[in-house]
Length: 265
Image (cartoon, rainbow, N blue to C red; front, side, top):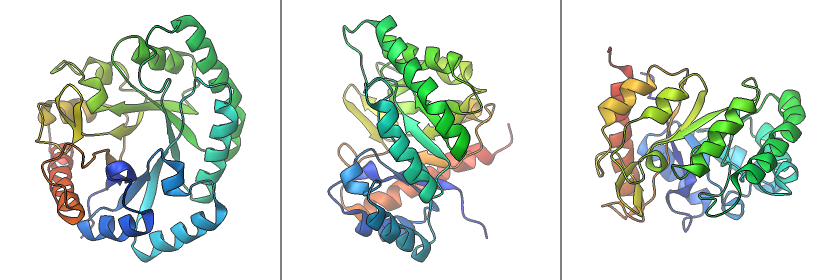
C-alpha cells in the first residue's frame, strides 16, 4: 500500500541533530522531509555532510521535497541562494523556499525593498534555468510584507518562480478568509501547513488551533499544487513535547489533512 505523500520540516526541533531526526521522522510514517532554514543544523552547504545525509535518506526511505533558503531582500541574496540551489541539485531537491523579507519589513520603504527583491529574482533566473530548480516565494506577515511576495510573483517568470503558501503566516490576527491562497491558486508549488492558536502561538499541528482545515483543503484542491503536503510545525507551542510522540501526533493530524485532500468535493 502506498503511503501518503506527507513531509515535515526539520525545524520542528533544531536541538535534535539531523542524524537523529531522520530515523525518527521515518519511523513516524513520513515519506518526505524538508530541510529548515538553519544551515548549521542541516549541513546543507557542506559536501561531506550532504553525502552523509544522502546515505541516511536512502537507509530510511525518505526524500527531500524542499529546502528553506534565505530571504530575497539582502545584498548577497543571489550569491547565497545560488549556493543553496547548487546544494539542492546535489540532493535532487526540486524546490527552494524563499521569504521576500525575513517576516516583517516594519517601517522600511516598500518600493525600495521590492526593487531589491526583483533584482534577486532576475539574478537567480539563469541558475534556475540551468538547474531546473524552482523557487517558491512564501507569504510572511499579512500586509505590506506579504504584498511584496505578491508583487514579486507578478513580475517573476512562473517557469522558475512559484508560491509557497504558509497557513500560520496567512492567519495572523485570524481567523481570516483564505483569499491569499485563492488569489494565487495558479502559482502554488509548495505549502507550509500548520495551525495557529493566537498571536505568537503558532506552527502547531492541525486541530490545536482555529484554522478550518476543511475550508483550507477545499481551496488547496483547486490550486495547481501537486504535493507533497509539508507540515512546518514546531514543538515549542504544541501540546506534546517528547520527540517520538510529537512526530506521531503530527503524522496522525497530517494524515487527516491528506484525507481531506483526497476526498471528492
